[in-house]
Length: 452
Image: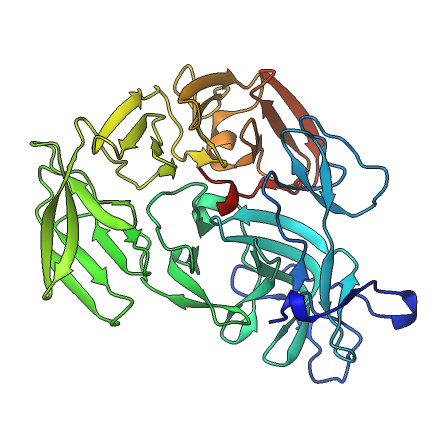
């Protein structure tokens, strides 16, 4: 990849006659939506390799003309996409660039069409992009593809499978990607984990320096998984009587019998796997020692702590929210897991998180068509706020929830034909509707520099 410190970045002028060329093909979950022009001698199409990196505080990625809370349109720049500060409403323009094969300079490219942004973790985001050129193994492909954004540097890496770039279709973020926005069971931020293929089996995408290469870990979807810092994956079938331990370092896969009759499901804390004995409230670490499964008392107690059976919990700082809206604090001073917010009735099934806030969905009465209520937990103040949407359905909020900022979320109807987006502002307790036939590209991107 290109090192920004060793390249000049110059505007793309008409004289260069270099542009991104689009295709009409939409692609699928396992294939790219473009064509290969790597062997036709066409050096006029420059592959996208960089975009403007994220500055802490300016973390909401959006199209310039999207109307959200405190939106302030800049009159002195016409970039198609911007990073916005949720605190001030100020905008930072986003440029896209690639390496000119004739000069080796980074040149500014016309903005491609961003279809979707998914916040993976504090290090990476995934972007579905139309009208984009990518280069893989010396061949150029033009069309609709998924690229991985390295947030700190702005480097863009094609997602590839079988030596070709692909377009990873995303209907609901939590069904496709294992993200820190929706799940707390993955401690590895150096690789990307995704549900992929016809059976939504667990895959991993690793950066080889030029691309993110997809490989399969497990064939089946019907199990819980936990991912440690080093990429080791532990799997628990629904029978709950064994753990399958896939050790990334030595490449071995072993199965260990385990009795979880009086324990919680496993969970990841500080990058390691734990359970809680529900009879003693002791928190135990699970490790493999001399090819045997070992449980070690950590000195922590967790009175009343219960994990989510389907791994649907999200964590920021010392706080974890489960899908039932309950919030626990992992107090490192007292080594105690404390419940600080009770569950809510009629909860949704997937919580979500911003940089300093946790969100969940519930409703007054049971039913998917009920109007949703959103509970927000602020990790900086330990305060809880519940805000009702004045319109919309809970099923849409649980399936398609977008964190715009720590004080604003958006959810939307099934995005086919004409549909409605709903923007919920926690400062004003208002809901704004937007009728559209194209999903607004908007997403808060969490970054390590702004973490607590």
